[in-house]
Image 1 (cartoon, rainbow, N blue to C red):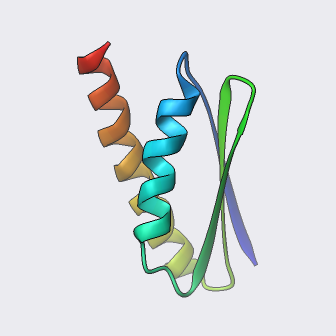
Image 2 (image 1 turned 135 degrees about the horizontal axis):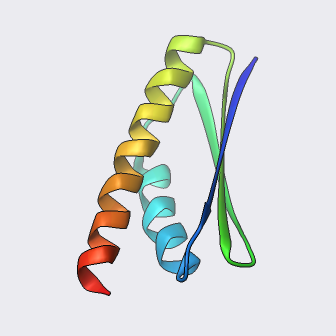
Image 3 (image 1 turned 180 degrees about the horizontal axis):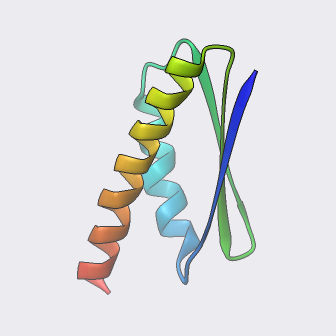
Length: 77
């Protein structure tokens, strides 16, 4: 099994988490699993899959979502 964990520390973790959570809930991932949670000022994202190609695809999707979320936050704040 492959696993990737990303930890993001930002001033407004609730905004990142809520935007990311909406994407995770709407994504039709079948071969991989994504868990996200808030811990203090951090957002922790864990991705798991038995299939490394699926894990890579999931990672790429999550990173693209984060790029958009963080860019939007930068413009807004």
